[in-house]
Image 1 (spheres, rainbow, N blue to C red):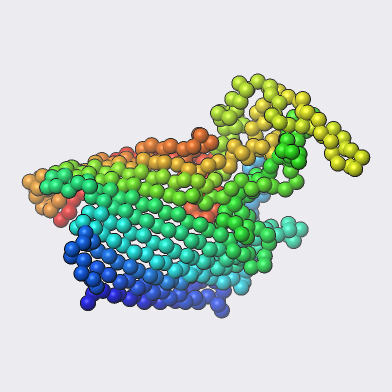
Image 2 (cartoon, one colour):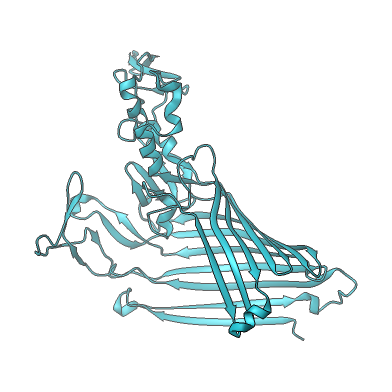
Length: 451
């Protein structure tokens, strides 16, 4: 008895953001769990609980509003510096959006399988909960770039199959447990691997987000969210080819790959120490690997506030291991000579800006998104019952808290918190940030009462 549990669910949605004649989508799911410790006699073992589970789920998601039929928006005239947006002097003006919407749009369907287990030992003082999952998302909705010669710049499409595989592990331990003192730790580990399986016969890539010449792309066979940007031209033996008159690297005809936003893994550690009426809690958050675009780094390089701009004490320098084109041989192949053109004081700032050194500057702008954070610290004091009873409360506590106390980042990112983004809070936010403000620390006091 009480060993095997099966839960089945089903849902059907009708969405107003999908075509009127095809706006219904159905998605079922099932969860099966087996409490093995109820089946076997484990009384002579340290096992308090042994549980296995399996789940299958299908989830649907609709489109964002206004992606079906053509829409009008407020007129917006782009200028070299800024723009003019209607209404102007009380006069309204509208224009057709430059994206072709899709009257045959389908919902996004995600199918997921999950296998997991939980074991608890020593009267629940030690526990491990682990999961493995595989997930496939079909028909993600993207705005695909098209030729501006059509009068539009993009077209809304259901495009692509994206897979995700990963593991999640949680370990909780109670090292100390006495009448007055309790110490608990909770550790989490997660690792996810995404892959763009296909784009349904569409383009070779879909640009998810971009800034200047940096792209954040969906490319078949690669993780979702690959950074592509200009790279230098090299000789066959690995020397950088520069412009003889400026000394700046020549830009290769095709963009190169700078990595993806996908992390190697993430970890978290939560500590809670309780002593009589006091409780101290603090947590660390560690995220390893992945890249992000930093507009802050771009600007700091241009104005000379970045550490990388102190190279050679800001004195003239020649790009190491560089050559210039010195004509061609009889077969028409280029010949090279040692580069002797300096980057002088008047152009050092150009070397660290995206408009004047496209070939190399993205090494400083697309940076490692790893970080370690002291995420939060809380100190709680439970007031005596004699005080709580005066307001007829069963419990009264005062908490002092702080969030985002400390942040450690790799040497390649001395610019900004990798979690800061002004590109929204969805997939596009994984692109990074564009000259946004720094993250904030929070401090406060909380009074809680239970009645």
